[in-house]
Length: 126
Image 1 (spheres, rainbow, N blue to C red):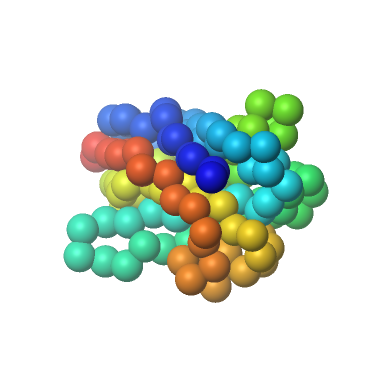
Image 2: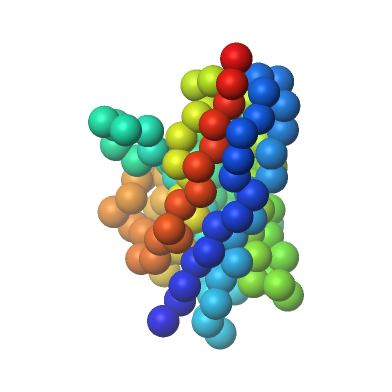
């Protein structure tokens, strides 16, 4: 069973940066696509970014691709989300995810997620 544990969230001022990490346990974690979603109260969980199992192919939400970068270190079973030029609209709980389908499938939403992390809060102050 794969477990995902996020870290790196916190409070940051507008214009600042944060790097989220997601540590995956389980031998097969590095063989699957992984991604990040985020959610604010009262709204659906939305896709942020995804990366294929080798780290060669990445996908981003259209409005975020200029500021966010997803990467992974399979030797450490860890996926990262580097976020820059943060603004208050980025405030949300950020969730790490794993898909046994593909990185592309994560773009279509949470239906293709097989494992979730517990989430980490990111708060951007104005």
